[in-house]
Length: 201
Ligand code: S6P
Ligand code: ZN
Figure 1: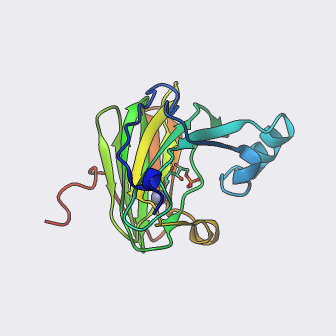
Figure 2: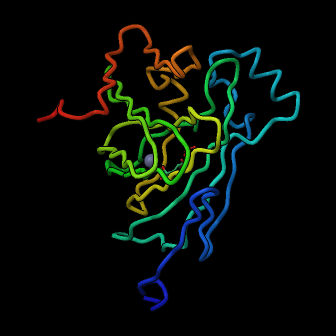
């Protein structure tokens, strides 16, 4: 093996921007890349026509795509909404049944997880770690007025499958409300707002 791929390294993450200071691959997703996912399709079409804003961006650290390696990737979701539904990531499930953690670096957001008819909402602020078990679909939201930045740690080969979320949705949506935000489950879904704590012990 190339020794460079098997050598320890240190990364520094800029908490406000999600920049990985030792390099990495940057990416971003505009609203058109999320077309059809927001509930207010008219507002979605209008915002795409009016300039197609970037909803989130991030960086993937230079960790080798090899069995056993742990990936590090940041995501920054900008503040905003489509209609009254907060800006969010696409949402996915891993191709391989492997877990992941999301650690909040700055801002205020939430992690929505789905398995079958169960939906769990985990509110995220700095120092909170959302733990995603294998097989759970996951999406993040910015519910604040500033960028929401988090870092993901994941088995480097776990892969992303976006199709289930496109076909079935995440089972709940997160809207602006008088109480800051409201998580609204779809019909037939069971929503756990208790940070996911305690239900499995
Ligand atoms: C990587 C990790 C994140 C997401 C990112 C965007 O495994 O889960 O970096 O890729 O938050 O979300 P999505 O659903 O568009 O991939
Ligand atoms: Zn993931």
